[in-house]
Image (tube, rainbow, N blue to C red; front, side):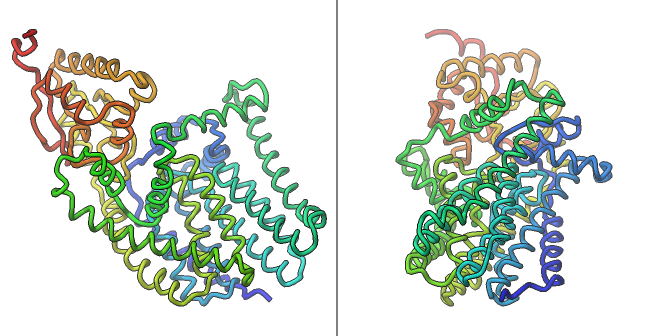
Length: 544
């Protein structure tokens, strides 16, 4: 008999998470938010198979609300409510699994305070629309697993888990491996108990539901796209394959296969803990690109200790969890393991440390840890890691981001550059409040990472030539030229490393600029350090 969670408790958990995340909302438009904001405001959206129904559903909700909250607050509300619903469902899952109320509340707090959820949740970055579907798929998978272990029919929960997984895939395609691995694990267990043929027959409703619901949503998306003229695909196959090619093009093309295990381990730890510079500074130091490690050593050591704590916790969960799963201990381990390994399959291959490809670990990892029912592990998770993450993630990232004085800082940056100025820097979000997120109308920007990736590719000479042209044009019109992050020896956050690996390390950029311009700084520009470029004296350009 399942220990059902009280509806009042479930509602209270959801409301508490919603209030907390609403208080953490920030005016900063991180990552793709600016694009979502403008597309929704223009009554349009972009069909992306990576998150097929995300923007269309957001637009439908915006229209249904009459736009009373405005575009940005509507998107924020969708995201915050999605996190709240997912956390409430997770609380119900824990209670049904037999965990105490306070323990379940603490586990929800651990989920809610995880770094990638705090990064995405209190924003208009609507990738977390999938969170309720993901939580419900896991919830019904747990019910299905326990019912079958008790000799009962779990078909209703089997079908529900498949249906919610199909919905999730149409909101964020990277969750598909989780649904497939769940089917595989349940098939293997069923085959051991009743033979392969019976196990396959028993699993057919799951496979059919996943396929039918998933394909129906894909077909509906294609029909809407053709009806509204928002796709150039000539048929459903082209619509699907075109989207897959676009998604594949984003795979990390800069990092070798040898680095992938380390990147995976770091990114998984980073999913839970705020580590602003450990990965990039550590690699820069190992590769000899960091001029003076003493200046950043205290920061590195502090982040390394936090990474060791969370990494040790995750390793303990993996080792104990694998041992118990292989010993066929109590039911409730296969489902979280399927969701953990499914998330790992995608994230390891895709190889990008961005929040939208890692938050899928948060619920199943936490559930797996509690399902192991080891007191020492509960203490490490909820008694040690939770308080540390509450302090580090909120004090280091969540609260400062919520209090960020965006309007004032944007005005200051605009004033520093002037109406004829040139901003040289990066477009990619480095994981913290950054000038790249500022709206500076009229100011010309040269984003090194975008030009390198989309225009000049590996031709560094062409990139630098274009940069010189833009600088010369700015000088000709009397504009001020400021370089952000690209010349800062202590800033190795993304995409500095990616740009360096693609052929333009900081030393090479500095050498090129120093040979042509007078470099001064750092100067304050909107609260951020920047280096100013000025024309040299006329004779400085003469050949020797």
